[in-house]
Image 1: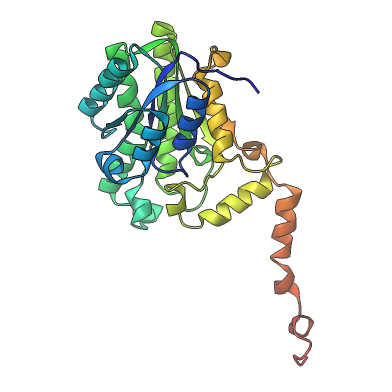
Image 2 (image 1 turned 120 degrees about the vertical axis):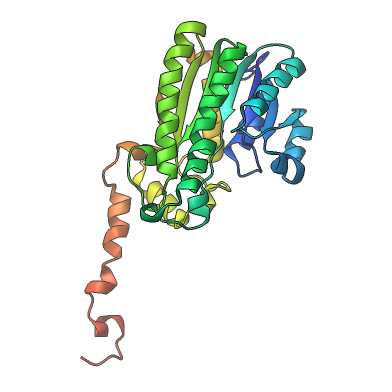
Length: 288
C-alpha cells in the first residue's frame, strides 16, 4: 500500500459529523497519509457533535461555518491558510440535507421553501465554496476539490426525492467550474458517486436499508463502504490523479452499469414464491 500520499499537503474537509460520515473517514485516512487540514461544520455540529473529538485526535483545527454563507466560507479559507501556513491543496465537500425528506414531503407535493434550502445546502454551497476559493486564489496550482454525489442524479430512485435534483446540480457545478478553474489555475474538480452508505443523512431516507441491499445485490463487487470511498477520495487528492478533472466518477462496485444481476434476479423471483403457491402448499393443514 502506498504511504504518505498527502505528505506536505494542506486541506479543508467540510461535513464530518460522526464516525458514520464519509468525511470523517476521509479525515482519518488523510491524516494517516501525512496531510494537515482543518475541519468545518455548522456551529451546532461543532458545539454538540462528535466532530470535536475527531478534531482533537487528529490535531485538525475545527472552524464553524454555515456552508451557505459566503462570509462564513471566506472565513474558513482565510483561517485555514493562516493556520496551515499556505494555500490549500485539497477540499472535500460532503454536505447534503433535505427538509422535504426529513418532513416526509413526497416529490409530487414538495414544499418549495424546503426545496430552495435543499438546493442551497446540498449543491449551491459547492458553487459558493468554489467561487470564494477562486476569488481569494486560495487553492494551490494542481489542487484538488472533490464533492460527494449519488447515482440518483442520473437515474430515478424512489424516495430519494429532491436530493436527486440537488445532486444533479452539484455535478453540473463541478463540470462548469472545473473548466474555469482548470484553465486559469490548474485546479481539478470532480464528483464521486458513491454506493448508498449508512451515514446519518442516508439513514433519514425512507427504505434506505432496502436500497442498500438492492444495490449490493446488483453490484458485481458489492457496495463500496465509507472507508473504501475515503481511500478513493484521498487518491483523488494526491498527485497520482493530476490530470483528472470535470468528471463524475462512479465508486459503486459496478452498480451504475448494471441492468440486472443474478443475485438480484434470484431475490426478485423469491418474492413471487408465496404469491404463486396454493394455500395448502404453504400450510399442510389448510383445506383445498
